[in-house]
Amino acid sequence: MNEKFFEFTADIKIIETQSNGVYHIRIPYDPERHKIEVDPTEFEWIKENKTARIRIPTDKLLNYFDQKDSFLDRRSCAEIKGIFEQKRKKGRKDLRFKVPESKKCIRASHISRDEDYSREAIIRAISRNGRTETDPKIAAVIAHQNDWSYAREARRHLFEVTGINAQFQGKEFYKVASKQNYYKWKSAQIEKRLDRMHYRNLLEKDRQNLDKLKARRAELAGELKGCQQDLEQFDRELQQLMLDRVEDVAKVDESLLTKRIEETKGPLLERKDQLRQMINLYDQRISNAEYFQKEEEKKSVERVRTR
Image (tube, rainbow, N blue to C red; front, side):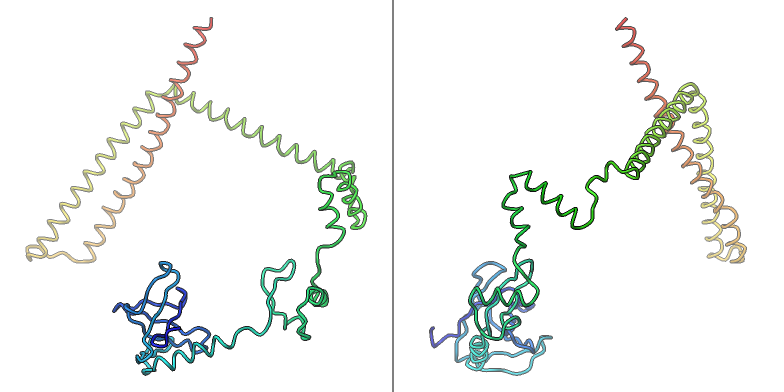
């Protein structure tokens, strides 16, 4: 109310902080989304990053921007104040309220033109637009929610009106469907059991051949080591060849060099990946077999103790 200052509050939605420290405040309800520039000394947070208080001297000229922050001209504070007051005087045309079963507010003018905002008038307007209060039958069920017999009778009546057979569990089709679901569940259980038996047989087989698995794993590791040495030797030869080519000691055709890399290094890298995968599989099988062997030994010791 101080005539020397234009003071108002602003929500974070219309506040933009600029790189030079000043603030751009968008003018509310402006279809062109114009903005004014506010100095930090004229800006104060009421709620941090939520609501701010702006206090501008009335004799100041304000920088005026468009919605893209492009400078337009300079406007007097009194002119900006007049724009704010004009928007404030505009206000709302009528009441807004929520209709039952609706998530949004509706203006009374969209429902009724007679400007009668009494409770009865609003209910009549809602009814004319296809929105009603809770159905009396549903309201009665809600009122008797602790009375199970009333709810059961209401459900039976609803089934009769909608043509639903309340005794569907005694029908032949329902019995057949129930049997099919049971057989499906039973077959799934049998399949899981067979899978466990098969997995256990494989573990037993690996346990009996644990030495062979470790020997085969050692062979693969030796082959992998040799493959790695061949790759390192090829890289050294290739590096020396490139140095000779740069120093003009030897002339090597580019196509022959590329072909040699594809025919030599490519198969070595592919074989290296295959060996790593095979070694990982053998490591997993050996680990599982050793764990299975330990568990069997524990069980045998427990059986001896119980005897």
